[in-house]
Length: 296
Ligand SMILES: C[S@@+](CC[C@H](N)C(=O)[O-])C[C@H]1O[C@@H](n2cnc3c(N)ncnc32)[C@H](O)[C@@H]1O
Image (cartoon, rainbow, N blue to C red; front, top):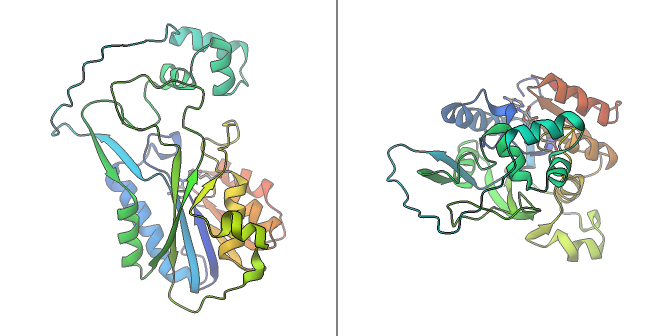
């Protein structure tokens, strides 16, 4: 981000590592995760133009084991354990190497959650369902880092997506939710905002432009990238909070959803990813004549 000109970005839209145990965030401990996000947010104070926006898509809950926390007492009176073993999953994977988690689950007659647990031995919520688990809200942290960078919270929307494990019944010793939503936190860089009612049609304003909850199905495929967000999510953010010809940044570009949609919507774009494979993927997915893709 240090290579981006000061006050040159109209909109920055991104979804960072959530610190939930994905492969691309294994190098981070909790302190490192906070440092990364706070530094990226801080750079926005420099790169956003006055009146520009930073929109952060993030799950609002973080879970990790805390040995100091009292043990949560749970007696499971109706435990149902899937008979599918790790060996079953490995055999299915061998017979269909290209199968998605969803397809493997269908082949084995179990849930996607079971497939992932058998393969990775953990769960999607970074330990939310083990005891003792400490739970922390992330939006407050992001809000503080943004305030430190001189950005003001302007709005927030809920992205109502599919439940994490749409085809599963959730069996665990927990009364916690399998969240089917994430947040979009919208921050404003002080300066004049051009208000252009023509960015959306009257129907679009009514159906989503002025609505707090956006119902958009998740990307079910996980063969291209582990954590793609849907193009429709990027399209709404870009159309609502930037103008034609403006520059859109995604500092965690992944498969290039933000940059691809920015190009389609007539915006210039910058994408950054630590992972060279993702950066290349994003470059291929995005129109070549625009600004640049950088891999950190
Ligand atoms: C949630 S994914 C983004 C997915 C993206 N929105 C899409 O639709 O494909 C987060 C991305 O952050 C990248 N990442 C992790 N640490 C990073 C860092 N220090 N700098 C830049 N990118 C990083 C990962 O490689 C991953 O591609």
